[in-house]
Image (cartoon, rainbow, N blue to C red; front, side, top):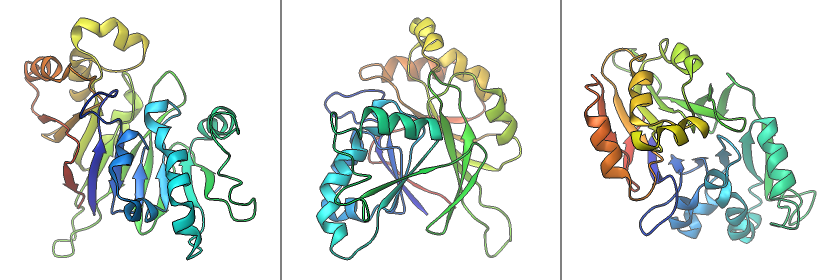
Length: 266
């Protein structure tokens, strides 16, 4: 499985796109502004969108994507794009975005019988099977109901051993339940947000994000030495945040995630 990083910034600026990851070309994990860099034919191949939570930097592209591909997908009758999210997130999308005021309701367009979007609820801990991919819904602790996701890399045919999981924490503050689950997984890649520097640790705490010091406490709960990718850093803060992370003395291999990066899952 191939995972393309379309966006991994905590906000927008030149060269900064908000959170979105494309898995094997047909599953989108979060739908931030990075989705807009895809060509139309690539957008039309997306069948599923997984949403971690309702904040704008993670959902902005859903409605625009539906509008862009409506005619392309309608011709071969490919069916609606399924948007998978917590029930609370689905309510937020219906109430605040697909309401005919902020954006047309593409769960009823071009017709109620053949809509472009279908909103599909999931539950914490659920294991989703999407186009041959196994994705688990993980715990997250944020200011709104939120989750993370883990993508199963499958089993190596030669050895019979699991290849490991690609884990995306979503936006989360300190979260003991997450590490409890990850201790029973073979984690190959961990994508974890660190939105603020230690200088803004109070803001990080209030907004349920991580700063480098808090990140260090969280990573201490993950055994071994894992490839850790830092996401959601605010524009202009990357150098300061990564310098502070570099002083943690963590056994993990920690790098800043960059848009355009490609990761292999399994």
